[in-house]
Image (cartoon, rainbow, N blue to C red; front, side, top):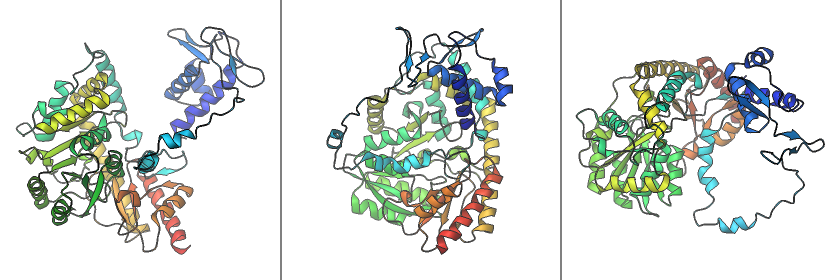
Length: 497
């Protein structure tokens, strides 16, 4: 059973029990609840927090948890009544619903409904039910995350002098310096002053798109590419123009043609372990991308999202494009969320010249700054010797899962897997002729495995039907293999149906 369902079940059980208690009565101890319900200390703590947020209980450090004196349950409807101070009322359910139809007019625009733009992003963030194997999410399973390191880093950060004061708008100097060295090297072209901290990678993409291109302008993107990039581009009022990708990364011959045809001033790419294909930009094309963009007077937004997800058996990684750029062509984006935690939303944009000023202005208008406690915790995390050990362990676990996934695909679904590189968290599958990726993904969910249809990864009509399969979010390698086995059975049904 998952932690989420355990917390929900325990909270439901305690809620029924507590509502029968008199005001001020003490709940059983955490140890007693753990033994009675056979759950972990964390489950008990989270369930108590749920009840506390609902006003049912109050926690008194050193004394225990007690039934709230300000909360009583009505006899008939279950509505909450209580004292004049601190009372809480539940909705009676008898009020006439308001007329919300006016919002259709107020929210209408030429760009279309925003929920359609965000739908592919919601799909990548969807948490499946406990009995469904997750081969969809781009975030590693919780067992692969450095939870103890994070907890210790947060605790130390909270005790730092000034940890709760307002940070500089660009970010803490020490953390910006760490990102500058990590991206460009100790003697590279990136200085501390070239770094702007953002609230994670998606926020950094949004800042870059809104800063570097005028509304209505074309933006060149890889095809296929991460749906979050397409959503950000479209939400900014920009027009994504696809440039095909092959096993060596973006087709530079077509990139040059696209710049000439569109006069675009921005190209967004993922040169390392590209999402969804996993391609790594070849050395020859690296130099060509920079040359072509410089000749077009355009920026290259380098989304380096997977650099910390290199597998244990991978060859030496190529340097970021930004590390070889002396002319301010590359705007580099780096985030720690994939390797650390989805909740450690700290990223960095690097740029030089007027572009950095433009990024800074957009960032401060949008969100002022990244919360200082998160920045302080990030500094503590990357300075901890355990961080390097965690990255090595993560690389080994990702290699093991990839190896299991590739073997299972060759055995169960021969012919669907093309080339892949030892890095990232995903594989790009080519489906047999006539199979609809959306239909297959829906059928797979009903069979207990969640995968990602390929259609949303294309800015225009896709040349073929694909699936993206993530092996990072599953609980272990055996679960990855079982998910592929279920997928094979579903594909057989869909293909013959």
